[in-house]
Amino acid sequence: MARALIIGAGGVANVVVHKCCQHPDVFEDLMIASRTLSKCDAIKASVKGTKTRIRTAQVDADKADEVVELMRRFKPDILINVALPYQDLSLMEACLAAGVHYLDTANYEPPEVAHFEYKWQWAYREKFRKAGLTAVLGCGFDPGVTGVFSAYALKHHFDRIETLDILDANGGDHGLPFATNFNPEINIREITAKGRYFEDGAWIETEPLAVKRKYDFAQIGVKDMYLLHHEELESLAQNLPGIRRIRFWMTFSEKYITHLRVLENVGMTSIVPIDYRGQKIEPLQFLKAVLPDPASLGPRTKGKTNIGCIFTGTKGGKKRKYYVYNVCDHQECYAEVGSQAISYTTGVPAMIGAMMVLKGLWRKPGVYNVEEFDPDPFMEQLNLCGLPWVEDSKPTMVD
Image (cartoon, rainbow, N blue to C red; front, side, top):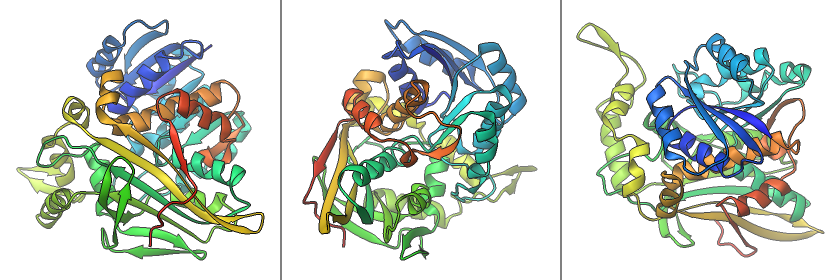
């Protein structure tokens, strides 16, 4: 049995805590820590009937020395980072100083520029290797499960994967004119950035939301989806030998896109500070403050998500296609853990990844993306922990 320190107290952290507490044989002792202690206490109070001990603490994740001091008092075996991606590097530094394994769900992003890239975290490989510590990067759903799906496909269904399309569809409806299903700041920075995909050894950029397709998703129906840049493309391009093309697609309604374009046109999505009554204010930070907290959407969100990977390639000299995906119900997630499916599909894989490290199944010194580990025990836990997957050997392809 082991101890885990969970940094963050939003919707994803709520899911991580609840799911860890369903496995007290692995997670004996938890500490939830964030800037706002009351949020940590609320998560703790929401967990009923568990054998796992839960404690809470206040900490500033931007300050590595504060985190180190907390870890030296609590003595965790692993830090599960479900805070903001701006804080990844300070938390990795803290883990090195305190001798603690590390796991996150999103790659580091500099606060001053919307730039998703792994280079800053990959630079820590040798430090973690020398310290004998494991760092697992991007262990949510996408990135995360999509990487595990890719490793599983390569291990069991292909000798070589030639193309990969990652499809992320949210068929949920919260009934509000405009709201984001996860952190508004991160969500809007991601969507308004230029699209990017990998093909024939090169990276190709597109204008934001310029490439659109329709796809008929199981249990959701036909949705508009747009080509985006997403961080797992970068690691998968390196870790899937000989792959020719990787693309990432996410669905958005016309209403959502219209609101977003209006906000962008009037400057509300900008991260460049402006002067307002003698203060420097980032418009996007202000927009985040007036939009609904994603954690508050759980009770009102209905519908399902469908996230998966469509592969083409060869096996035994023959061409083949393979689609593996998960469908998750917003209301079922809320009934189980008090969070909607977007948080659930991120939080459950984070718990499973931590379980893999604590059990020694994914423990090797260094910094790794999830597709670099054995996918089989993780895939087994997805079925057992609320994210069952479906296979299709004849998927409809994205043109």
